[in-house]
Amino acid sequence: MAKDIVKQKNSMRIVNKFTPLLLIIVIILACKKIRIIGYNEYITLAYKQTICSDFWTTGSNDSITINNVKRYFDSSELYIAGLDIKQDTNPDTCEACNCKTGKTIYVTTLDSDSLKAKYARIGFK
Image 1 (cartoon, rainbow, N blue to C red):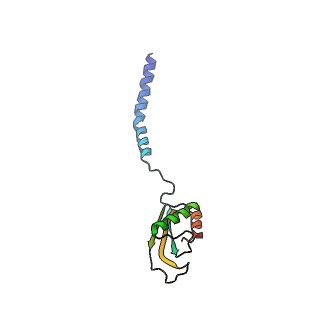
Image 2: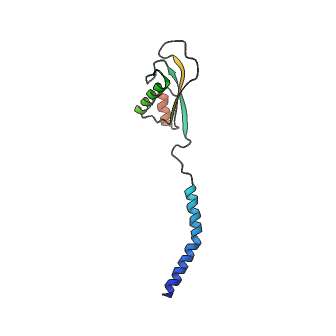
Image 3: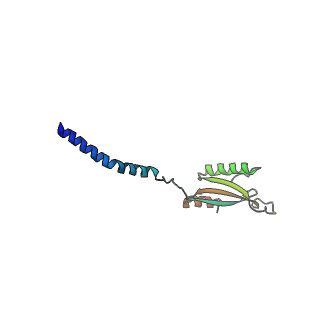
């Protein structure tokens, strides 16, 4: 019985010695940042909008056009992290379908070769 009490006290001493060390390790591991997949690995690509030769329907306003672009990307299984349209230049003075509207569509996506190739096939640079 006395031996059991001595063993128990020795065990408690060992636990008490290592408790602060274990606590420090747990705190360090808990505070470690978890890297999100793709974190800081994005790229923004641009496409010069045309009057009527885009792969999606140009809407009567930019919000509708952005929704149409998003639907096209979703149906083509293209990952989108962000999507925007801006009037960067004056529109071309011609009226043909391939004339530029002066607007640029920007898509932010993961910086992967396969995605960049897919976006390049539809004119994003």
